[in-house]
Length: 467
Ligand SMILES: C=C(O[C@@H]1C=C(C(=O)O)C=C[C@H]1O)C(=O)O
Ligand SMILES: [Mg+2]
Image 1 (cartoon, rainbow, N blue to C red):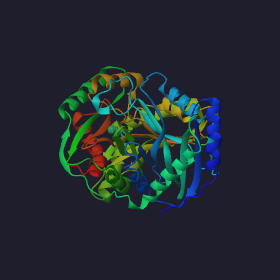
Image 2 (cartoon, rainbow, N blue to C red):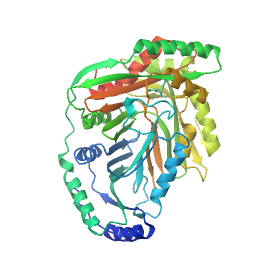
Image 3 (tube, protein in one colour):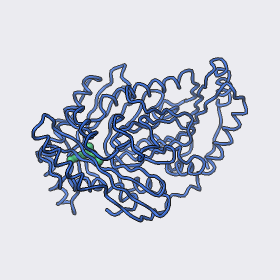
Image 4 (cartoon, rainbow, N blue to C red):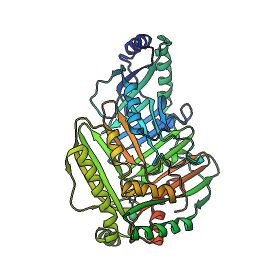
């Protein structure tokens, strides 16, 4: 049980109601308090009845930041394709205008924050698969648990309208106490029983790889990332908490995320950061080029060395480095990156990895950075526009949010977005999982197929599928 000592919330709500009446629009009150530490997953699971479909879970790759939201105090959703990053920023800033924020801590990821992301390509026709998500889908939670470097905080967000009165305070207290008193009971360790597992048109996908390799040899295009899908069916509705628990246990050094929207849940364990902004400090990642893990240490080292010197993989990787470096140099200063890629070793796969740091220009927001970077050649290709058009034309998969920016942004402009890889979409008794790979002129359909098979494994193992 977590004790909640209420502070200035009452005053804040009273003030906000007066403001809402004056301005004739809703006003946000946000209060942050330090609380006793609880399991982040337990906080998520607590919302499984009262807030099902209105939750998110986030853990960064270094285990420093956990952010879990339950309930929705404000939705920012749109299918508008043009200027979508700008529009999200505008709505977010509008929502924060005149808000009352009671936050004694100068800690990123506390206070009002929104969580969500964008679809990969808003110009690709949406299929039924992704009907529960918009092209831009964010929400600001009612209750947000943040565990930042071991210290726990609870943010309560309340939207006050001109029709509210002080009884709202009582409602919030009751709801919050009820939620917090449920924490200890949250169950999440049950298994999901698989009925069937089907790769979607693998031969057709390999034919597309062959076709693209042919085009890369004759046209000025250099790289196109092609992705595919596996569909799974279960006896019962899939227990999201169980999937998250598995991802947390097995996928170390990854961003672990889950995002619910209208009853579906997008979930995964990505090793790839798109961009993090912490004050003016920026962090981004070039990740491309892959090989399997070895059976033992010696075997694994040999494979790692092979990857570090393999021309095809180095080429795949270099396109990402060149593009990210150029993009960062346009919007930031002191862009630093090593000359040579390193290895990133994950449970199922190893990658070529180049970390990038920089300092943001005073006027650049994380949403502008995302707009510049997405999609990098790790998920799109080179040249960007042509590659994305190729994907739109040839790929039968509706990527939805797979391969897209997904993450959080707080009211101070700090935020962290992953590239939503190694992911799946849970839809009650069924799930789709996604994997892609960088196709370059030296690719073969068979080896790219094998690479995607490895990339399915993190989600397959978390879902209890056949690896
Ligand atoms: C496209 C995926 O991964 C991307 C493609 C990689 C590659 O082709 O070598 C490696 C890492 C990611 O940037 C995926 O996991 O689905
Ligand atoms: Mg590859």
